[in-house]
Length: 227
Ligand code: CA
Image 1 (tube, rainbow, N blue to C red):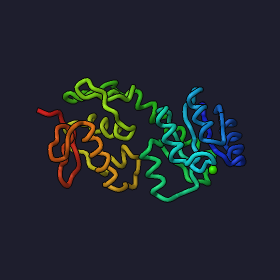
Image 2 (tube, rainbow, N blue to C red; image 1 turned 180 degrees about the vertical axis):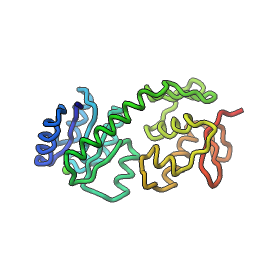
Image 3 (tube, rainbow, N blue to C red; image 1 turned 90 degrees about the vertical axis):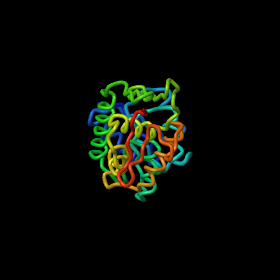
Image 4 (cartoon, rainbow, N blue to C red; image 1 turned 135 degrees about the vertical axis):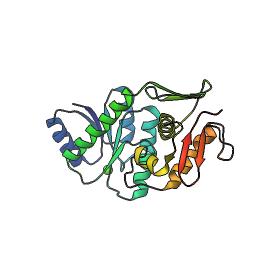
Protein backbone atom coordinates (compact mmCIF):
# COMPACT_ATOMS: atom_id res chain seq x y z
CA UNK A 1 0.00 0.00 0.00
CA UNK A 2 1.32 3.42 -0.92
CA UNK A 3 0.10 6.98 -0.43
CA UNK A 4 0.13 8.31 -3.97
CA UNK A 5 -0.27 11.86 -5.22
CA UNK A 6 -1.43 11.99 -8.81
CA UNK A 7 -0.92 15.31 -10.61
CA UNK A 8 -2.87 14.99 -13.85
CA UNK A 9 -5.15 17.44 -15.61
CA UNK A 10 -6.98 14.95 -17.81
CA UNK A 11 -10.09 14.15 -15.76
CA UNK A 12 -10.69 10.85 -17.52
CA UNK A 13 -7.16 9.53 -16.96
CA UNK A 14 -7.29 10.77 -13.37
CA UNK A 15 -10.56 8.98 -12.65
CA UNK A 16 -9.39 5.73 -14.24
CA UNK A 17 -6.08 5.67 -12.39
CA UNK A 18 -7.62 6.63 -9.06
CA UNK A 19 -10.20 3.88 -9.39
CA UNK A 20 -7.70 1.21 -10.44
CA UNK A 21 -5.08 2.07 -7.82
CA UNK A 22 -7.62 2.46 -5.03
CA UNK A 23 -8.94 -1.01 -5.90
CA UNK A 24 -5.39 -2.28 -5.52
CA UNK A 25 -5.27 -0.91 -1.98
CA UNK A 26 -3.45 2.39 -2.46
CA UNK A 27 -4.46 5.69 -0.92
CA UNK A 28 -4.90 8.23 -3.68
CA UNK A 29 -4.86 12.01 -3.65
CA UNK A 30 -5.03 13.99 -6.84
CA UNK A 31 -4.91 17.42 -8.34
CA UNK A 32 -5.00 18.88 -11.84
CA UNK A 33 -2.36 21.60 -11.44
CA UNK A 34 1.33 21.76 -10.65
CA UNK A 35 0.97 24.55 -8.10
CA UNK A 36 -1.60 22.63 -6.13
CA UNK A 37 0.55 19.50 -6.39
CA UNK A 38 3.43 21.43 -4.89
CA UNK A 39 1.19 22.60 -2.05
CA UNK A 40 0.11 18.99 -1.40
CA UNK A 41 3.72 17.79 -1.24
CA UNK A 42 4.64 20.58 1.17
CA UNK A 43 1.68 19.99 3.46
CA UNK A 44 1.14 16.22 3.53
CA UNK A 45 3.08 13.01 3.48
CA UNK A 46 3.10 10.89 0.34
CA UNK A 47 5.22 7.93 -0.66
CA UNK A 48 5.37 8.88 -4.31
CA UNK A 49 4.19 11.44 -6.87
CA UNK A 50 2.95 10.58 -10.36
CA UNK A 51 3.43 13.76 -12.38
CA UNK A 52 1.94 14.54 -15.77
CA UNK A 53 4.30 16.76 -17.78
CA UNK A 54 1.56 18.50 -19.75
CA UNK A 55 -0.17 20.55 -17.08
CA UNK A 56 -2.21 23.70 -17.63
CA UNK A 57 -0.45 26.05 -15.22
CA UNK A 58 3.28 25.28 -15.19
CA UNK A 59 5.57 23.65 -17.74
CA UNK A 60 6.20 20.04 -16.69
CA UNK A 61 9.94 20.54 -16.56
CA UNK A 62 9.55 23.47 -14.18
CA UNK A 63 6.98 21.56 -12.15
CA UNK A 64 9.49 18.75 -11.71
CA UNK A 65 12.22 21.19 -10.68
CA UNK A 66 9.94 22.90 -8.21
CA UNK A 67 8.98 19.59 -6.64
CA UNK A 68 12.61 18.49 -6.47
CA UNK A 69 13.68 21.72 -4.86
CA UNK A 70 11.35 21.14 -1.92
CA UNK A 71 11.30 17.35 -1.59
CA UNK A 72 13.22 14.15 -2.23
CA UNK A 73 9.97 12.25 -2.69
CA UNK A 74 10.12 9.64 -5.49
CA UNK A 75 8.58 11.02 -8.69
CA UNK A 76 7.32 9.08 -11.69
CA UNK A 77 6.72 11.15 -14.80
CA UNK A 78 3.71 10.36 -16.97
CA UNK A 79 4.11 11.95 -20.36
CA UNK A 80 2.42 11.84 -23.74
CA UNK A 81 5.72 12.82 -25.35
CA UNK A 82 8.07 10.03 -26.28
CA UNK A 83 11.02 12.06 -27.58
CA UNK A 84 14.23 11.05 -25.92
CA UNK A 85 15.28 14.58 -25.03
CA UNK A 86 12.18 15.06 -22.87
CA UNK A 87 12.80 11.78 -21.05
CA UNK A 88 16.53 12.43 -20.55
CA UNK A 89 15.76 15.90 -19.28
CA UNK A 90 13.18 14.59 -16.80
CA UNK A 91 15.57 11.93 -15.49
CA UNK A 92 18.37 14.48 -15.27
CA UNK A 93 16.17 16.76 -13.21
CA UNK A 94 15.28 14.28 -10.56
CA UNK A 95 12.56 12.03 -11.94
CA UNK A 96 12.94 8.46 -10.69
CA UNK A 97 11.16 6.87 -13.62
CA UNK A 98 8.82 7.75 -16.47
CA UNK A 99 5.88 6.28 -18.33
CA UNK A 100 4.76 7.13 -21.82
CA UNK A 101 1.02 7.51 -22.33
CA UNK A 102 -1.09 5.60 -22.86
CA UNK A 103 -0.27 3.12 -20.12
CA UNK A 104 -2.36 0.82 -17.97
CA UNK A 105 -2.71 0.94 -14.19
CA UNK A 106 -0.89 -2.40 -13.85
CA UNK A 107 2.22 -0.97 -15.45
CA UNK A 108 2.01 2.18 -13.36
CA UNK A 109 1.66 0.10 -10.22
CA UNK A 110 4.67 -2.05 -11.15
CA UNK A 111 6.76 1.11 -11.70
CA UNK A 112 5.61 2.48 -8.34
CA UNK A 113 6.63 -0.78 -6.66
CA UNK A 114 10.04 -0.72 -8.36
CA UNK A 115 10.75 2.92 -7.49
CA UNK A 116 9.68 2.44 -3.86
CA UNK A 117 11.78 -0.72 -3.62
CA UNK A 118 14.83 1.18 -4.84
CA UNK A 119 14.11 4.06 -2.45
CA UNK A 120 13.88 1.52 0.38
CA UNK A 121 17.15 -0.14 -0.62
CA UNK A 122 18.87 3.23 -0.76
CA UNK A 123 17.86 4.06 2.77
CA UNK A 124 19.31 0.74 4.00
CA UNK A 125 22.74 1.67 2.74
CA UNK A 126 25.58 2.36 5.15
CA UNK A 127 24.89 5.87 6.37
CA UNK A 128 28.19 7.50 5.56
CA UNK A 129 30.86 6.87 2.96
CA UNK A 130 34.21 8.43 3.69
CA UNK A 131 36.92 8.86 1.07
CA UNK A 132 39.75 11.10 2.19
CA UNK A 133 38.18 14.34 3.36
CA UNK A 134 34.99 13.57 1.50
CA UNK A 135 32.00 12.41 3.51
CA UNK A 136 28.78 11.24 1.87
CA UNK A 137 25.66 10.45 3.85
CA UNK A 138 23.22 8.49 1.72
CA UNK A 139 20.39 8.71 4.25
CA UNK A 140 20.33 12.49 4.64
CA UNK A 141 21.73 12.81 1.10
CA UNK A 142 24.36 15.26 2.26
CA UNK A 143 27.94 15.44 1.14
CA UNK A 144 30.75 17.45 2.66
CA UNK A 145 34.39 18.09 1.81
CA UNK A 146 36.65 18.78 4.78
CA UNK A 147 33.53 19.41 6.84
CA UNK A 148 32.14 22.00 4.41
CA UNK A 149 28.76 20.96 2.96
CA UNK A 150 28.70 20.59 -0.84
CA UNK A 151 25.75 22.12 -2.66
CA UNK A 152 24.99 19.27 -5.06
CA UNK A 153 22.03 18.61 -7.33
CA UNK A 154 20.31 15.23 -6.76
CA UNK A 155 22.06 13.87 -9.86
CA UNK A 156 25.48 15.13 -8.81
CA UNK A 157 24.94 13.57 -5.42
CA UNK A 158 24.02 10.23 -7.00
CA UNK A 159 27.09 10.27 -9.26
CA UNK A 160 29.38 11.19 -6.38
CA UNK A 161 28.01 8.51 -4.07
CA UNK A 162 28.12 5.89 -6.82
CA UNK A 163 31.79 6.67 -7.45
CA UNK A 164 32.61 6.93 -3.74
CA UNK A 165 31.06 3.52 -3.07
CA UNK A 166 33.52 2.17 -5.65
CA UNK A 167 36.48 4.36 -4.71
CA UNK A 168 39.68 3.34 -6.47
CA UNK A 169 37.78 1.49 -9.21
CA UNK A 170 37.36 2.83 -12.72
CA UNK A 171 33.69 3.35 -13.57
CA UNK A 172 32.72 3.70 -17.22
CA UNK A 173 30.36 6.38 -18.50
CA UNK A 174 28.14 3.61 -19.76
CA UNK A 175 27.91 2.14 -16.25
CA UNK A 176 26.97 5.56 -14.86
CA UNK A 177 24.29 5.99 -17.52
CA UNK A 178 22.82 2.60 -16.68
CA UNK A 179 23.17 2.65 -12.89
CA UNK A 180 22.78 6.32 -12.01
CA UNK A 181 20.73 7.70 -14.91
CA UNK A 182 18.88 4.40 -15.23
CA UNK A 183 19.11 4.47 -19.00
CA UNK A 184 19.61 0.77 -19.77
CA UNK A 185 19.97 1.54 -23.47
CA UNK A 186 22.75 3.99 -22.64
CA UNK A 187 22.67 7.67 -23.47
CA UNK A 188 25.02 10.43 -24.43
CA UNK A 189 28.49 10.24 -22.85
CA UNK A 190 28.38 14.01 -22.95
CA UNK A 191 25.63 14.02 -20.31
CA UNK A 192 28.02 12.23 -17.95
CA UNK A 193 30.95 14.49 -18.85
CA UNK A 194 28.92 17.62 -18.18
CA UNK A 195 27.84 16.37 -14.76
CA UNK A 196 31.40 15.33 -13.93
CA UNK A 197 32.69 18.76 -14.81
CA UNK A 198 30.08 20.40 -12.55
CA UNK A 199 30.99 18.00 -9.81
CA UNK A 200 34.69 18.79 -10.25
CA UNK A 201 34.00 22.48 -9.95
CA UNK A 202 32.09 21.94 -6.73
CA UNK A 203 34.95 19.83 -5.38
CA UNK A 204 37.30 22.68 -6.25
CA UNK A 205 39.27 20.75 -8.84
CA UNK A 206 39.57 20.43 -12.61
CA UNK A 207 40.16 17.64 -15.11
CA UNK A 208 43.70 18.92 -15.63
CA UNK A 209 44.42 19.19 -11.92
CA UNK A 210 42.39 16.37 -10.42
CA UNK A 211 42.25 15.74 -6.73
CA UNK A 212 39.45 13.20 -6.17
CA UNK A 213 37.99 12.68 -9.63
CA UNK A 214 40.45 11.18 -12.07
CA UNK A 215 39.63 10.63 -15.72
CA UNK A 216 40.99 7.39 -17.08
CA UNK A 217 41.31 8.19 -20.75
CA UNK A 218 39.22 6.00 -23.00
CA UNK A 219 37.80 4.07 -20.05
CA UNK A 220 35.95 6.26 -17.58
CA UNK A 221 36.45 7.92 -14.25
CA UNK A 222 37.52 6.91 -10.78
CA UNK A 223 37.30 8.58 -7.42
CA UNK A 224 40.29 8.22 -5.11
CA UNK A 225 41.47 9.88 -1.95
CA UNK A 226 44.30 12.29 -2.66
CA UNK A 227 47.69 11.36 -1.25
CA1 CA B 1 -1.93 16.63 -19.38
